[in-house]
Image (cartoon, rainbow, N blue to C red; front, side, top):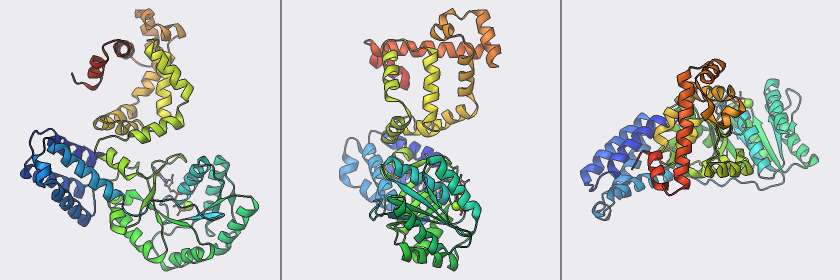
Length: 443
Ligand SMILES: Nc1nc2c(ncn2[C@@H]2O[C@H](COP(=O)(O)OP(=O)(O)OP(=O)(O)O)[C@@H](O)[C@H]2O)c(=O)[nH]1
Ligand SMILES: [Mg+2]
């Protein structure tokens, strides 16, 4: 979502930190760029104005400009201000009460039902026992959708006959939770196309009846500034405790996601980053700021790896790499393991210094290049995978035909693998620095 903004900010800040001395005029030029980048990303104009003013005030102070690393200090100020902007409001996720009641509200299609399921999965991982409640008395299909999701997660779903008043469904959900010994109730409420009095009254009544400890507004980040307006309207009518921003993986400009907390004072507590039930992230403003400014987000990357990669297997791979026994078979396994961790572009954006390559990497995946690599390796015999040295002309043609590629593709893969092995040899030997230089393109 933040690709374009991120690219522009990175360029501006790169210019700044690459400079030996920084003058007030340099800061002003950078601020003009940042202002434009934010406005073009659809960030609320008032938020942009305050942001730029804050950064400028802190940056043009004598201590900063006269210091030896002034450029980097200004970059740090931008980063800190961005973290403050993203992190407005109280982000604590409350789970008091037995059962603890969490209500999800929002417009139609914003992602309430999907987020309810994601939240259930997240809570199970935390060792809790959630119950999902289909508090939408109007569309049986809505309860069916929740039931399907609940079944796939092995989380029970409470539903009531069509037409049951929503307050009754919510109360029934609490009873069911006590009966089934569930410690958390997640209410998935009905949405409307636009904000209307009836919807607000209904949510307020549910809120009164079951006193949720969290009432989270689910907002679709793809809808731009409209999302901010929706949040303001809901805030006036129901006691909201925070936000879930969904569809952050979309290609909207992202400004709404950046300004919504600053404008409404409501904290973003979770972020939806995909359609699957594991695509939910606890919102960390510092991590998102790092991703946007191209400083990476190693914490999230490590967490994803821990979740999806088997620790024993990872250790085995590391050992093989070190002993230079990393075969094409291992290569294939790695490609598959990494893909489980998420879209390639997202992952690259989390590696410090690699943010600039995120788009290219994603495009390569979208073009099917990983699939091509997989197909080539799959067309090899086990012997060939272990020892690509045996691949002669006729084998090469067989592999190309088998994988629907050309012999030049097969060649390229074998060469890449050989280079990787060479680099690993240098890493494990004395040439660690040279190899790192080769990897990052620096010397
Ligand atoms: N890409 C992406 N899609 C999402 C995300 N969250 C939800 N969706 C999709 O958005 C659509 C609507 O999601 P729902 O969860 O059904 O929305 P809802 O708010 O429950 O909708 P109503 O019950 O009709 O009001 C579905 O196609 C979801 O797959 C997300 O974080 N990323
Ligand atoms: Mg729904």
